[in-house]
Amino acid sequence: MIESLLVANRGEIARRIIRTAKRLGIRVIAVHSEADADLPFVAEADEAVLIGPPNPALSYRNTEAILAAAKSTGAQAIHPGYGFLSENADFARTVEASGLIWVGPDADAITAMGDKINARNLMAAAGVPVAPGTADPAADLDAAVTAAAEIGYPVMVKAAAGGGGMGMGVAVDEAALRTEYDKVRAFAERMFGDGSVLIERYFPRVRHVEVQILGLADGRVVALGERECSVQRRNQKLVEESPSPAVSPELRSRLLAAAVRAGEAVGYRNAGTVECLFDPATGEFFFLEMNTRLQVEHPVTEYVYGIDLVEEQLRVASGLAPTFDPDALTPSGHAIEMRINAEDPKRFLPGPGVIRTWVEPTGEGVRVDSGYTEGNTVTPFYDSLLAKLIVSGATRDEVLDRAKAAVAAFQIEGPKNNVPFFTELLDNEEFRSGAYDTGIVSRMR
Image (cartoon, rainbow, N blue to C red; front, side, top):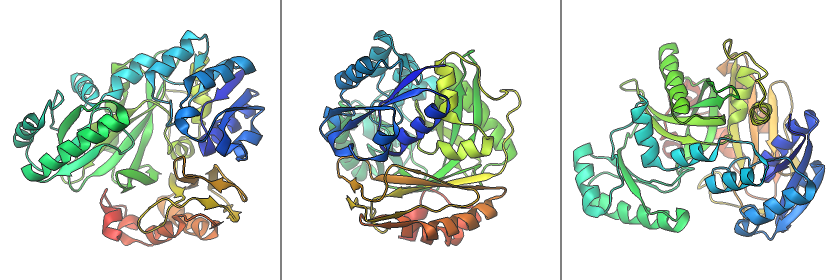
């Protein structure tokens, strides 16, 4: 097993990784910006290194500073968490070239799945269903118009190098396409350094379902069930649950088999997620993208399968067998995760500030993965995620009832936060029925 680990991230995911690593007897090094010096993850690590100012480009995305911290502390491995450098193939290669262990998939897999067009084509060749769309980038507006006419409106205009719900627009006709194409292309060039755009069929009433995969050290790829991620604002997730209330046993079998094929197609190792769109009207599902890292919502899978995914990541990176029997994976119960963000609960606009009160809920089946505590300052430099409230139980109904009580007990004063939204959601009949889709939040607003 790895003996020393540098966590190249911050907030709740850094604390999450630190917790498992220390349980396993691994020495943990945290890196932090000047803005994060007082956050819990810094104090909880065995050692902490300041790597730069608040600007993430000068700290958490500063590869030279992170590698220097690893060298000065004698770290044996680097875990990137999610976001920042977690899906940066060049960083993964540099880490390994430096003689360090990269806790994640290899750089070739990251590269293969990082471009949405390349990923689409790879998945189609592997027999994974893909939505009708372009096999090559739409080189210019005329090409986009021609492609959309062949696919049929409405269409989704997507940045090929995008991710996390960014770089996407919907066009219901040619006039809208002309506007969205220029907008997405400009955004993609600015944010990702790559203006390539693809056109796909858009499904107005669709569900977002993903499969957790794990590429083992012996070369096998296993699927650890599905997660429902359809409660979203601006194409970004707010709630995830496992199993999905929309997935039948027959669909689950097909979905998990397709996700395993996806992983096998790129020789995948370590934790990853195959994201799909599911059309309840037809029963069809389509490959959306693959996230080559640990997902924010991994705890719901951990509860349902009774495993620690961070431990499994560390075991794969160490060349060790998993803690579970890959041939006897048996899910049990239900779990829901709610993302507690520093944003107002109506328009979801960021609201940083000093946390005057922070009281986390407790009780059976309740877990809080938090990045902050009372007295900390939520700054505008990073993602608005404050904590993840995860609730588990034997049935979905039991989980919904426990979640209501947990949300009511979560007290945060200071920065704006979206806790009131979850109170509203858990009383929403569409959500409670399980028959919801990605438009649920817009219908609530």
